[in-house]
Length: 147
Image (cartoon, rainbow, N blue to C red; front, side):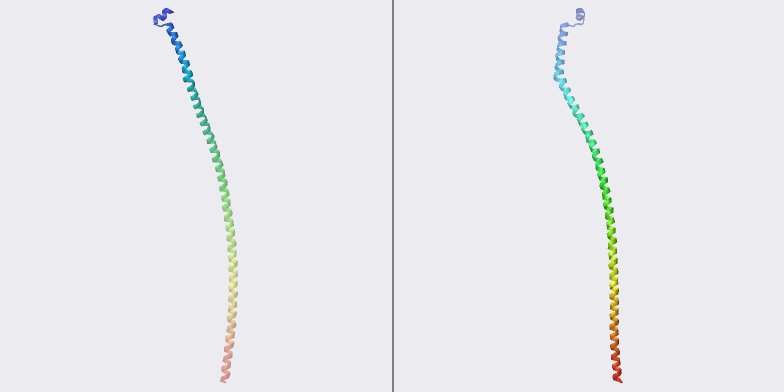
């Protein structure tokens, strides 16, 4: 085997020394470089995974919050519609009451005006009768004085 190594120009002790040096360098690189890099990569991978998980949770919470908000909005719209309908009904009832009240006052004012007109007519008729009676007395006195 020695002849074979010599034919190719290989030195067995040099190969053994290089194998030991390669092993030492491999162990040193593994210990000082590979393990710290893998730890950093694992930590980074965990952070990314946690970030994705947090983003998914946030998306779920957002969807839930949107659902709750839309439900509350629907309830609020329904309540608002009820309030508007109630207000319209109240306004209609108040309008009807005010119209009835106004009509009643109009009837009272009309009847009061009619009564005053009748009273004024009666008063004017009495005054006219007094004036006619006085004129008739004056005419009769004038006729009696002439006769």
